[in-house]
Image (cartoon, rainbow, N blue to C red):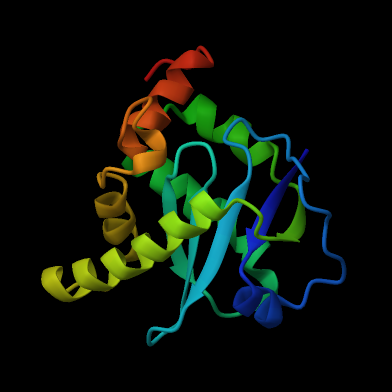
Length: 169
């Protein structure tokens, strides 16, 4: 009943967690681990990217120390916006009682996070929006090379994962 957020150095400095898990820590969520970084927009934003599906969640960073307690609510909103079954969302939220923080270890996901940071800034300016959920939905339909052997797009990979776990999509 836990999950792991692998954070960039700049985010770990903001969160200041009491302990840092060892590399390779695994949570109990079906979605698996999350990677996170800080975007120094005004106001500041946290970008979280799922390691399995590359699904992204954007949420306000402040206050950084309780990022993990606020994350489930934002994840639920993104899952609902993608049309995921409530049963799946409830299952994932039930697994999010405890969080472990760790340093980033998957360079591929860190690269995707860097690309998503760049794209989110571009979408924000082009669409003239500060709606973080709308930006996350845009990022979910960006082709990602780590997914080329599968569904290519994070939103499609999410649907494949949810369907494979016997949740009706």
